Image (tube, rainbow, N blue to C red; front, side, top):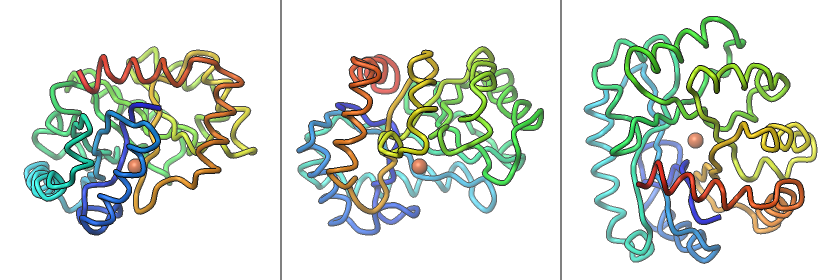
Length: 232
Ligand SMILES: [Fe+2]
């Protein structure tokens, strides 16, 4: 896997890497694994934050991490993992949270809200009112989506794209359903969603092996699409 569009490795701004040294060490590990393109996507929680303050924090953390030789060797970009609540729409400038130079917005659905018209309406607002393309973060975490491919298909028809976390393919419980979505062409991006540690090597190996077995070429396809879009 050469690209990763979902990470929390900017130090000290969310529940991800705490300090420069932690982030630097993880960047070294992912580079060693072959990563060349990385997007930093700290959490944006609409309650109690503002787009301007968030972007200033993100800029400060990026400046600190840019001293890392591993950082300098990577092609990086910036976005946010935006929590999709009603409160989001009270904010000015949501578009500025999209991956830089794109209209793709990494969007995290609410965990305590069952799938339904409310979720669809919020996604429609992002698409129709703000001309954004929601990239649904780790869709496998939401049983309401993982167990209902027809809903995923509906959201894609609406204009959403889908991201899955690589390590989830190592999960015996989820893998079969995840691979069905992959094989049906419903997944666009992979990420590791790294926070405070790199993936355990056996988990990463297992996930890549299962993917290659069930969907040969899929990882490379995700890399190519990420390079064309998020890292263009
Ligand atoms: Fe995340």
